[in-house]
Length: 376
Image 1 (cartoon, helix red, strand yellow):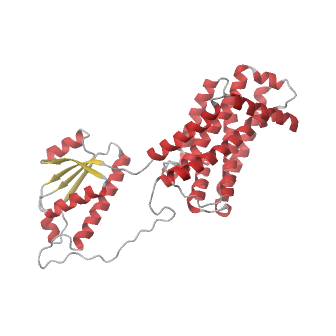
Image 2 (cartoon, rainbow, N blue to C red):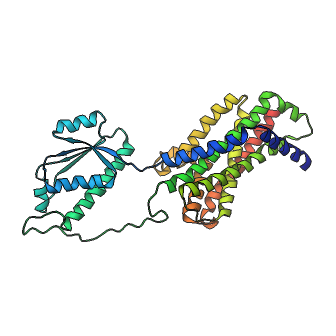
């Protein structure tokens, strides 16, 4: 058995070595995607186009506008003179946010009263709108704190309102709230899933399409040995991909890795078992590489969307939350982010590791049974 399995493994690695573009396809596109995802996948919103209508023309109103400019989050693209001009900026897309400071703003502020301020946001892109509103709230809160501290003049005899309690924020595990620390570990799991599933599905289908599958089956190699010979190389390639992308993410984006490499290795191995099972399952459903591509797109994309990579699972409908229970990427993202940023071990991550192990065994068993049936 071991001799036949060794021959099958050598066959796969020789094919890989003879393909002069193989290493390029396995390494370069992966690194390019990490760079693109790392820079593009972010919740940070900068340089929001902003229109301003200042109807107060006071020192306080100009101070508020300077607070917005100083953050670097907002770019003033228009100093409007009328409300109609502000509406036109939003309608035409010239501005995403419009700030309207009504007359009496400074007077009400100096009297210790509520100062009128209107903020209009283009809700076409709801994510950008919500983030921009969050920035606005923070800037206004800082402006109010400055006003209470005496940065802006108050009316004689009128005391600025005092603060009874102060809130001090202390984010754990990501003190700078750098969203790349959240996205890069997720990119590692996502790209590994796409790479391994595609390689496994296309490799088996290609054997069937060119007619070499039947030649292998009439040889002394048993179906089980053939399956091992096809999956073990891609398992090793998957581990190499995880190591490569992890090292690249740590060095290029300076993502901290505070956990144990052994826990990372265990989680990656269990995840790869499930990914290999999924790829082998696709190979039993597809007869051509075009069909394999279509099935890969049909299955992997939902797994990506329903993994918690960018969208919280708790916010999804209940039916979709149940579907995520059979998604190995969901559990691997929890493991890899926890290992990267929290440094926790098996005692904390064992439910996710057990779920991946169960899914891996289940998918591989189902795939092997279907594959053996497709050979008969």
